[in-house]
Amino acid sequence: MTIEQHDPDYLDRLMTESEAADFLSYTTRALQNWRVRGGGPKFIRISSRSIRYRRRDLITWADERSRLSTSDV
Image (cartoon, rainbow, N blue to C red):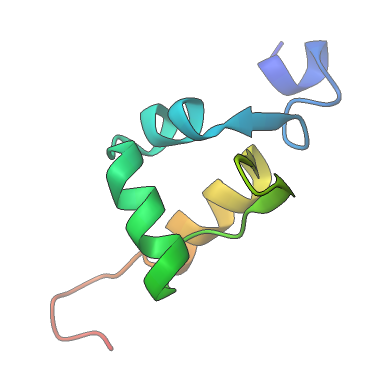
């Protein structure tokens, strides 16, 4: 059984900025820069100082950047 079968909320549970950065193997600073400049994964602003991410959105964002060669646009 996969994690998703054990935990039906696995893909939609909110993750902290630190957890999201670890999941993507990036720094929290990279996530912060993407939020300001755009181009990063979708995020949820709970309050001005509380940002969360859904695992589903992180996976989608990464999948959208998947390429077969360096000449792919």
